[in-house]
Amino acid sequence: MGLFDRLRGDDNPRVAFIGVDGVPYSLLSEHEDRFPNFAAIAEEGTASEISSIVPPESSACWPSLTTGVNPGETGVYGFQDREVGTYDTYVPMGREVQADRVWDRVQDEGLKATVMNVPVTFPPQRNVQRMVSGFLSPDLEKAAYPDDVRDYLEGLDYRIDVNPKLGHEEDKAAFIEDAHETVDARFEAFKHYIEEDDWDLFFGVFMTTDRVNHFLFKDYERDGQYREEFFEFYEKVDDYIGRLREALPEDVTLIVASDHGFTSLDYEVHFNEWLREEGWLSFGTDEPEELGDISDETRAYSFIPGRFYLNLEGREPRGSVPEDEYDDVRDELKADLEALEGPDGKKVVDRVVEKEAAFRGDHDDIAPDLVAIPNKGFDLKSGFKADSEIFTTGPRNGMHSFDDTSLYIDDPDASIGDADLFDIAPTILELLEVEYSRSELDGASLL
Image (cartoon, rainbow, N blue to C red; front, side, top):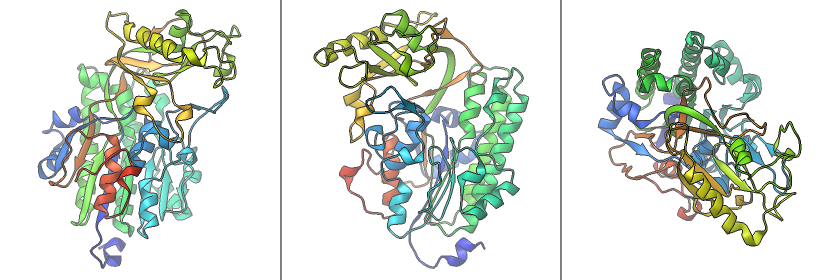
């Protein structure tokens, strides 16, 4: 019996959320024989594919999943965002998330939360009983709160993330070994604090799944060299999910979810180079390195993944598109994007989403004017160095997808239906009987 059991003497509901970053539902549902623990949750509870958000990028997805609101409310649109009224850019961190996280609401009700390895949570908050920041944290020493957490995790050889540079090697053996060591330590840490902490909400994320997918997903989908190693890694993840489920008291509801899906990558598409060649973007220097190097003749520029901004008068410092031409110019760019074909003759873009259809809130002033959702196989890049080619290949063979996002709820009364990422936070809040206003959130409880 752990400290958790000794301290508990009430009937308050509890929830454990385990994130599996980038894991597609099709992978788990089509191979139930290899992933029996996911299959058991589906059989005894509820499971289905859900939709991610626009854009399906982890730095935007996790703030939305943990708050239940869109990037116009969280203020985070991707790995890189731009300052209002300038061409300056920054990498959003935890403090840039402007909406209440689900664990903030839990703590405000006098309940306790343990939060581990969630992307975009650095620096760790001190209004929760325990937090280890995830992706974008510089190191474990700065990412763990309180100090005794760091001391324990160092003994496990806990890593914030895998070493992605190992994935760039042709021989993936070292990368695969590093992925296993990373997920092993993550599991041990999760199990330890699940059993030892007195929590109402446990919220932990395995991000190594996303890293493995980026470098091995095509091996899985197209029977490549590392297909069996890919399955072996996921069999371990499945085993760890089962063991964490067994470690939970019976009155805890388990939710397992990804933040986006995954598919094979055939081409990286360098959209700022495409914009340059098509006359949308020009640079004021022969060797551009950043957004500030664009010239006042530019009509549009791009950020990853597939975010497009018009160079609008009154909004951008050197804006060239008059406000009264905004709609026409945006429609023109949208049509050009929809018509773009790859080297294989396939359409690059599945659809183009206008900002007002995807974003609303106090922070929509930095929202992209258009977001392109790619067809399978086309990974949308940007970059401000005028690349020699629009379509290239690299060491990554897997890419994010909007669809095929996973959601498993260990509760047969849940109804997933046509759910999306925004529905997870209100579902957790309802399970915990934490009151919230339905109008505050973009999602709705699935119970």
